Length: 177
Image (cartoon, rainbow, N blue to C red):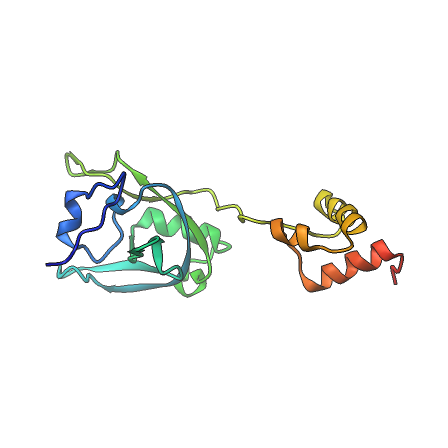
């Protein structure tokens, strides 16, 4: 017998017993940002004789201890992802795209409200700020470097490329060549 894992508040949703090979709303407890590894048009893995667009992800788990499953994409989901991919309609161009999925309890199947997984139509913001020349964060990073003589505190909270790091240090040290 396969062990069912608690999903929300240490409780196990009954739908987990049906073992769908695809991500379902029962597995989502909060919105999650995922990175598309690839999208394929393939036969339904649940034994149904249908074809689906299916997104596979880079992240191995939806949360600690729970494996991340692929997501069946409907036409609306594909349109959202296409928009994130500079309007490319080609699924091969969708690798590396970040999406935010969330649980929508109002999704209907026929007359029944069954809930479902939705993709947020707003592109996920990068979780970490970028230190770029001329930005407010750039000026604050320069002050931090003057004060600390290191960018360790800056790098703990934001991303900076090695080239920009060298440029920032040169600017602070007075060598702007």
